[in-house]
Amino acid sequence: MTSPAPDEAADERPLEGWCPHPSEVPLPEIVDQAFDYRGDVTVLRRGADPIVGYVYNRETGGPAPFLQMFQASDGAALTVPYAEIHTIHFTGRDPAAGKSYEAWLRRKAAGAGV
Amino acid sequence: MSVPFSQMVTVATYVLRQKRRRRTRYPLVLMLEPLFRCNLACAGCGKIQYPAHVLKRHLTVDQCLRAVEECGAPMVSIPGGEPLMYPEIGPLVEALVARKKYVYLCTNAILLKEKLQEGLFTPSKYLSFSVHMDGLRQDHDDAVCREGVFDEAVEGIREALRRGFRVTTNTTLFDNASPMSMQMFFDEMMDLGVEGMMLSPGYSYAKAPDQEHFLRRQKTHELFSKMLSNPKRRWKFNQSPLFLQFLMGKQDFECTPWGNPTYNMFGWQRPCYLLQEGYAATFQELLDTTPWERYGRASGNEKCQDCMVHCGHEPTAVNHTFSSWRGFRDTVVATITGKP
Image 1: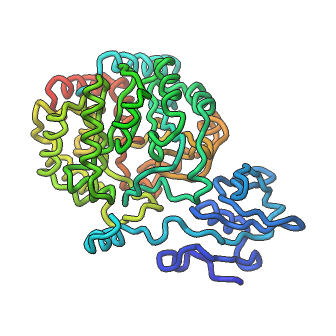
Image 2: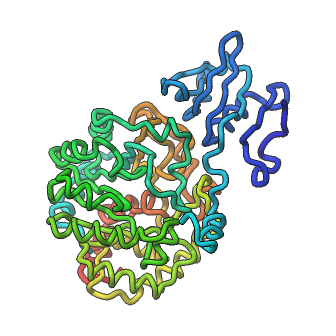
């Protein structure tokens, strides 16, 4: 599934569930969004199994750009060169979603869950 | 000002040594985040929104100590996450104190009484519990999004003071802060017997749930001027008086993003404690490869325009104290008169 770039309406639609196609969104931009995302993602690689985990860094300078991530299954720290990445799907839950200050105020007013 | 004399001497000696070496970029406080896990989910905090497998991770004591040695700053602040949830917090603090680092353990104090009763810590001039208190009871409980936390924190503070520990408070202010309430809060903290208070305006973390209430620059000046223009002698602040003057609009400081470098499980955070634009593997790499000219108000970077947070500007204030006779005089006068 392909969806529009997230910066078109970032406020209304969080990144969760975004599955960009590299023919429509440049890979460095997809990686940047994955780096900015606070949930897990699935990195789809060329000719290798996908990796599910949290992208915590990326290095775009130098001859071989790469991202760094913690794999969700075993916590391993992995370095993945951009050259091996087909695309990234934003498959994990966004941990910041649904926890707004307004939501807390509503819960507080209702006298529950505070 | 309430910073102990020995700590002032240590910091002054350190800064003068850096200046003698003509080191233009040096760290003052290492922000050491051993974990992101927390027992609160405050509306203004952008530090803890991570997947469960990341929240379960933490640095080892060895990793923490290597970062401390690598950085070389005389003070280490341990925020997080909630550092009292870090399973190795006792050994870590003990090792830092043994290295004569001034440690500020930044805690919401929910677990403080329990940890003190377990005998996890020993009082030392090098160790201060810096308790997160965002105002009077209702204001604080609102800020941390949970009722009853203020009272738990007060109980923890009392227990720490009773056992002879240094205790300071750290307060983040948002645009709904009332100067009069804050002045009552200062009185209440002084009545409790804390050594001093630290104040800072909040930063609008992109990941913080509450984006509506962060202070803009002009409002920061107004709020701090109203709060501090006629301070009571008994109010003690555990921070540079020039930084407080900056918040009141009496000084104009640029940011020193390398002044309080941040180390956590991802590495050395670029460029500062507040912005996450990447990570360096070593402290030297952070210093050498971060494009510092892109940060701070003068750079035009939008993310920096309204930031007046302590982690970037207090190192500037301290550096200013030791950069000119005027800076030194301003600091001495404010310290003696107790009037920022």
